[in-house]
Amino acid sequence: MTALAEPRLAGTAAARGGPFTGTGVLLRFMLRRDRIRLPAWVLGLTLLMTYFATALDTLLKTEEDLAGFSQFASSPAGAMFGGPGFGFDALTIERFLAGQYGLYIVTGAGLMALLTVVRHTRVEEQAGRTELVRANVLGRHAQLTAALALTGLMAALLSLLITGVMAGRGYDPAGSLTFGASVGACALAFAGITAVAVQVSEYSRGASGIAGAALGGAFVLRALGDMAHIQGSGPSWLSWLSPIGWSQQAAPYTLDRWWPLLLSVALAAVTAAVGFRLSARRDVGAGLAPPRLGPRRAAHWLNSPLTLAFRLHRASVTGWSSAVLVGGLAYGSFTQALLDGFEDAPEDLVAVMGGSEDLLNGYLGLMGLMWAFITTAYAILAVQTLRSEESEGRTEPVLATAVSRPAWLGSHLVVIGVTAAWLLLLAGLGDGLGAAVSTGDASLFGDVLLGHVAHTPAVWLVLALAALLYGAVPRALPLVWVAVGYGAVVGFFGPVLGLPDTALSVSAFEHVGEYPAEDLGIAAITVLCGLAVAVGACAIAAYRRRDITTGA
Picture 1: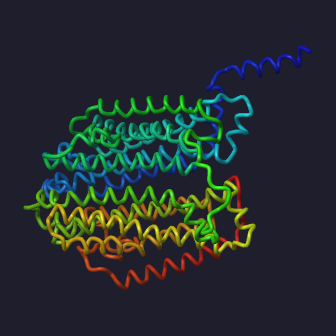
Picture 2: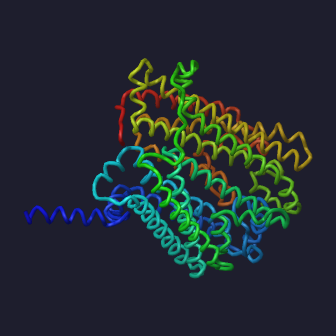
Picture 3: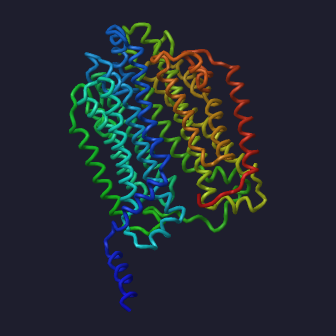
């Protein structure tokens, strides 16, 4: 009896350990699952920063070189794509590096945190694994705590590596430490925001959408606030509503102030506490916002794979459409402010703005490229939802009917492709209208609209590549983000970093032409369309040959 009683009592004591019981075990399990993903994120962002630093050291060798870029960095356009420009009146390489390119490392850290928390909380619940794990001795808050701890560990490692890289290049150690801490602080802030988002929706894509909207909103608020700050008028306080803006307000290598980073830490603590509180008010697998009950019978128009695909993507299409239109109007409205800030800009700086001697057209062409990358992000995320539909067991029942695999995947690709073109159209409408109103030149509207829509074939090609990975090797689907990241680096920073034409030509987005700054490559557009169709056909063929997987 004694031998039997001791295990029972031990189990009872463990069960009474509290809501955080088992956190350490879960954390070790998460580390085991992310043994590839964790170093990929941390080392990838560190290597990207190393590349920026190496390229700038090679490009900006003299004070004259730095002076040539100080005007661009201190302009509204520089604020939009970089930051408020602290210390740019006495520009150094490290100030330019942290103030202009650090934005993308900070934003990448926020995205890393967002995806990590969703992966280890809501995705686990949606797949049914959380319920199995919690049937053992595990506290209610253990999973969220372990996910936040893992994200905090990734943020700390990223901060240390970036600090080491910057200090190792001979930059000021205090400024390097401040910059590294600003990157980690942003990751912590969005980890906390995501901890709340995963309590709201019972679906991983809904939680990712909420947290992703917060990240996108933070980027836009920061851009608008920083542009107003550089311009000397307008709502510069908008930057203080953004966790990304707080990281930039630390002003590495200039002010080296830590107190703005405390805002990110405080936000992380408050939102994490709210997340814990909300998680105690819902059932496992459920969300605080329950899904709306649908009708007993499906609508008569839901009679084909194409209409079903549209129904599944309808919510994300609505959200993205609203965000893109508003963002286009916001960026377009700053066109005249940019022109005023560059009245006496030298030709080499004008060339940076889209590679054109005409600053206005260069800026508008660069906006089209920016929205092409944003639309590509939508397309990849939409393909990732197909992976979720399959792993969660909803695809197999559909394919068990008269719906064929080519019809199912092809319908989704058609809906995503049409939506991508629609989003670029909306971005063009917003940018074109904003530019026409701010400059008083109504003729800009048509050119801006055409320049944005012209990038559609490049987006389609990346969409087809994502579909090919999904159809052939679903686990390798995240690799398609490499194409987006590379395209963004060569598209935005290629002229500044002096990249060779060979490196530029690898990106599909470089062949379209940034109209109205450049002529449209009609032949290239035709080839991109053909390649997109061919790769899409290969994706469907590959999908027909592989097994349907669930619970992956």
